[in-house]
Amino acid sequence: MENNSSNFIKNIIKDDLESGKHDHIITRFPPEPNGYLHIGHAKSIILNFGVADDFNGKTNLRFDDTNPLKEDIEFVNSIKEDVKWLGYDWDNLFFASDYFDEMYKRAVLLINKGLAYVDDLNADQIREYRGTLTEPGKDSPYRNRTVEENLELFEKMRSGEFGNGAKVLRAKIDMSSPNINLRDPVIYRISHTEHHNTGNKWCIYPMYAFAHPIEDAIEGVTHSICTLEFEDQRPLYDWIVENCEMESKPKQYEFGRLNLTNTVMSKRKLKQLVDEGFVDGWDDPRMPTVSGLRRRGYTPEAIRAFCQEIGVAKTSGVVDSQMLDHFVREDLKLKAPRTMAILNPLKVVITNYPEGEIEWLDAEVNPEVPEMGTRQIPFSREIYIEQDDFMENPPKKYFRLFPGNEVRLKHAYFIKCEEVIKDEAGNVIELRCTYDIETKSGSGFTGRKVKGTLHWVEASQAVSAEFRNYQPLILDKENDEEEEKSFLDRVNPDSVEVLQGFVEPNMKDVKSQDKFQFFRHGYYNVDSKLTAADHLVFNQIVGLKSSFKL
Ligand code: ATP
Ligand code: MG
Image 1 (cartoon, rainbow, N blue to C red):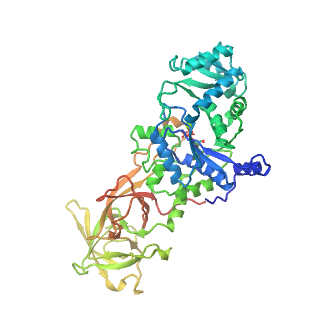
Image 2: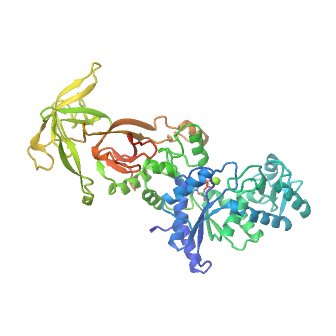
Image 3: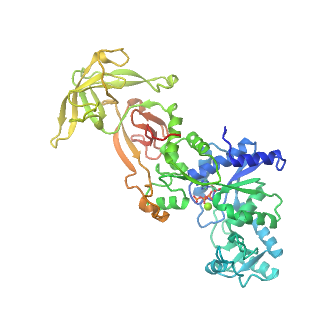
């Protein structure tokens, strides 16, 4: 996949290859299978797979499954699907849990070297003993257990003699280090929990900070790329690689995470939206998950182009979500067939058009791409237009339909509004119009001009469809005091609008995930979950225009 932009990680890799530090590179994408991937993960995937591609390297997909309480095979499967959909294929598929034996051995090695000990303090005490940024920590009373005692206790932890939380294994580093991560971090904990991969084999599990560098080293990963919040963990990462005597010496590099306006970007929060019923599952079209974006109709090409454009930097910022919309418009502009859809139908009867007659008109599928050919659309005495395209008492400069006014029907004729039919409540339910046969589209008619052009769908052949238009799921913070924890209070109550209308008859055989540009409405995708044989559902991907400028 082409990738022309440069970034600081690419430059590091280039230097490492040129200086001979490495003769090939290996990266990895290491998700924890505790949720679905979001577009922030997509940035990490595109970076890891992208730099490896650029330098003929390899990329592993590795599930960082060291916390069985939150992990599930459903997430493993969805992550694999999402990585593939984004356009990448891993060289190897690994599970951190495949290395549990090796990790255990390395922990025993640390104990033997006097660099790890079993601690009986509980989590609160450990936190208390750890000290603060301004005060050094103090030693646990168990810090000076002998190697023999530690080996015996760790073995007992493993064989299940202690309950959850009764003991932990800690690295013995420096309780007064200015870097709190080095104040004897916990590296193993007890958790009597079944694991999706190893079943009940283990009741102790390694902590992320211990497991991750070992996983990287076992796989020969050269450049371990992670997000900025791990910067302070780098000295611990190096300490573990060194003291566990790993043969291969991976190096960690950090980049800024992606944040987008009008959404939340953390699996924990997204899970809350799902569990508390704010959305219809992880793949709800309003979600920033890869599966939600796919169902909404975003394309892998657009997501990759977006990630290239935002680049990779040493700082995190918030990116305007309209920028992603810009890239999906760019991608679909030349790919999506154009067609007419009526979202809020108003019946129009053309009184001087012969009853029972249908004519078929030629229309281009995409005027910007002549190779996409033409389609046939029917025209007859009865059609639908949008309710919004008629006003009984229009303001000045309203060029659409009103009593006595003439407009152009896209691909068809000029029609003029002669009469307005209302129900008993006074609602407009039908318009009576006349058409002028001389004005047929493509006939070269120049007799007179009209200012408005409306889209329409012929009534007898129209296919019913449901349309779902979206607004942002999360409203912007109004001020800085609205702390993060209140994101549930900022869920937009009007983020979806469901409409029942019509599409052209040539749309009756569309397939799930097919994408179209509806004239004047924007880009739409056939919903993959709600569409059934007799029920077509379209998700609005994006509107046509944006104020966003690159
Ligand atoms: P979350 O906070 O959403 O749960 P995470 O970092 O815990 O995300 P992991 O499964 O551990 O999720 O992430 C896998 C990889 O994706 C990590 O290398 C992580 O740094 C990266 N990643 C996660 N979120 C982002 C983001 N918003 N931008 C860029 N990379 C990200
Ligand atoms: Mg995580």
